[in-house]
Amino acid sequence: MPDAELSDVVARLRAAGCVFAEDEAALLLAAAVGAQLDALVARRVAGEPLEQVLGWAEFCGRRFVVERGVFVPRQRTRLLVREAVAVALPGAVVLDLCCGTGAVGAAVADAVGAVELHAADVDPAAVRCARANTTGAVYCGDLYDPLPAALRGRVDVLVANAPYVPTGAIALMPPEARDHEARAALDGGTDGLDLQRRVVAGAPDWLAPGGVLLVETSGEQAPETLAAFTRAGLDARVVEDDELAGTVVVGSTTP
Image 1 (cartoon, rainbow, N blue to C red):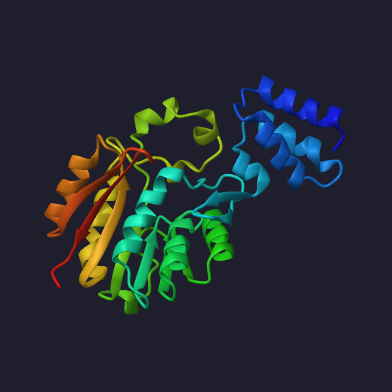
Image 2 (image 1 turned 90 degrees about the vertical axis):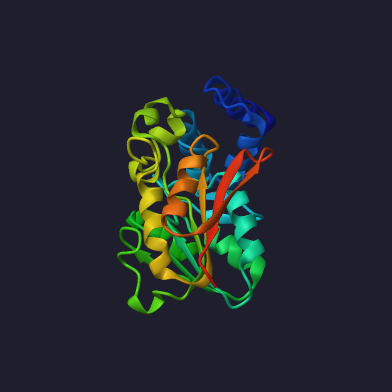
């Protein structure tokens, strides 16, 4: 790309408020084919997340396909992956609920090795991405509803990054999220914990003896998330990572 054209793209991105304009310009250049560059830059300038414009997101050392409107994996969710990897053994049955692009389950499988991976999401576009990003079985439907009955009582590790933004707080989110990601991937109900409670309440029926449930939450909501684990009969604890700004509740069934 001529320097003048690169400078123009950087200037357009800066004017749109892109903090890392130079880095984004380089990525858009690499993704562009001929006249497509202008269209990609226009989408980014209009506020679409860079990952959706590029068609991929980097997470845990690999690229995951991301379609328009699909939830973009957050870097704080690496804590959820890290904690799941710590309890998963090779050959484990792993279930990724509210899987979005399938990045969490796939990253766990990458780190652990051979696992039996299952994933589910209510959004057909997310399911499409997850099927492109993983060799595991991916189901479309509401939480546990689409899972095969044969999976009941066999899950060793259940990870869930269920939406936990309170409905009233969605309007306060950055435009990249509130305007370009599916509402179902963001809205956690009045206090943000509706989906989490359903995930936790249903988990004991699907977990194997000694199985582990891991749910991403926020630091402020962690006490209520933890309380849901306790009500479900799980022995649970809160894990926080200030560097990642991540919070995960981890609970297990009786072996």
